[in-house]
Image (cartoon, rainbow, N blue to C red; front, side, top):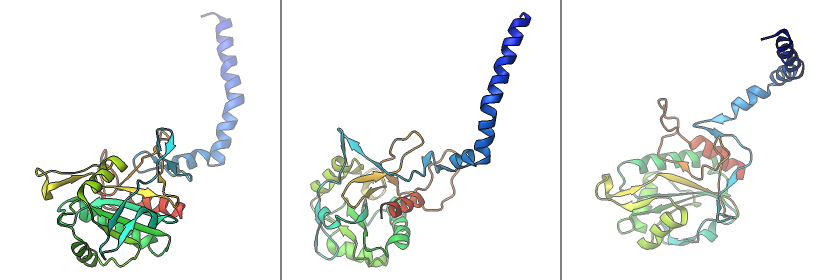
Length: 241
């Protein structure tokens, strides 16, 4: 390499130092780098102040229409929740695995934001043959749930499974091979005041769509394991409220 080449490279390095190093120092001084690092939470999730809409076929996805009977024998529909921020889950009362964790997590959510009259929870059974209104009422009492905006719903089996699998895309099905005889994903859907499904984004800017409800809040996890999402759900509920 001749002297002219060395001079050219040195000139490029000098120009880079003059232009970019002061900017890098300035960013560090203003804590921009630190702040961007703080945006990472959980497993690649961000603390975006704007929650995403779920776009489906070019339109923002609304909660599908539903109408079922609650633990008190009253008819409840999605229209009863317009103007409220709420969480929907699919569960069943005899579930021996993830449902107790899910509802323990929802009790944590209710403890944090249940005092707001504009917040609610909808728990829909995927075992309506067993989970009658009376059974759901006993279940709610067992958990000490008396919030009028937390409804445990039962109804026609086909309507419930259509709502879960097709309406939301939250898996639920009978499966005699799993404990309890029913398989489901354990996800929570977050709905805003206008009835739209909302969520925060992942590290790539894509909505996470639903929140993992089957991992206990505050649970310690090993590297590579899924992390609890109840704290971020509570944060996002508060944003919508």
